[in-house]
Amino acid sequence: METNLYETDFYSWTVEQSQFLQSGKFEHLDLINLSEEIASLGRQERRDLENRLGVLIGHLLKWLYQPEKLSRSWQVTINAQRREIKKLLANNPSLKSHLDVVIAEGFIQGLDLVFTETPLKKKDLPSELPYSQDQIFDSSFPEDIDFEF
Image 1 (cartoon, helix red, strand yellow):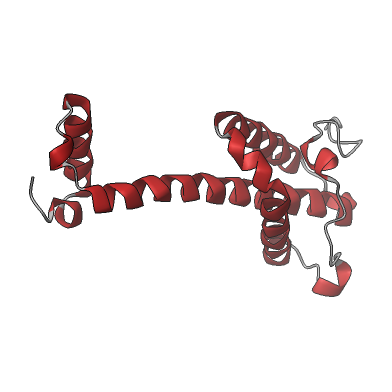
Image 2: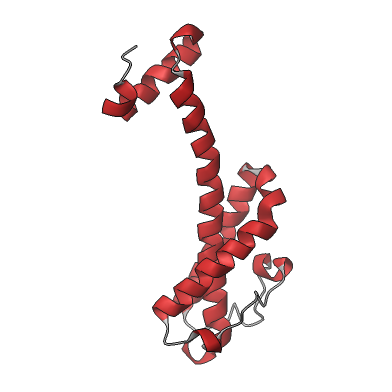
């Protein structure tokens, strides 16, 4: 095992580590970097959930605060984020125990999205999330989500 392969060719390092695991050559494993990468994978799943919630909540806020600009694109984004969040939680059920915190973080990201994509100001938007967890994940919320164009 090259000691600096992790730093010089990450892909080759991952292939090598996988081969060591599959062949039972545990003594060759780069345990320090391997443990960090495994932990990183978990953090990435949580970040993905937070980012998807940010996009979802941001679009729900735009839907609520800019009803005159409702678009099919917003509807598609809301539905796609809900679908991807559902898959992410199904594949990582332990993330459900972090939902309250991740939703709060997603709300902050959602506000950033609204500030970036609309002329709305901070004073125009809620200081607390105006949706329950059930509403965030309810495919029939808001009521006019399946309107026709």
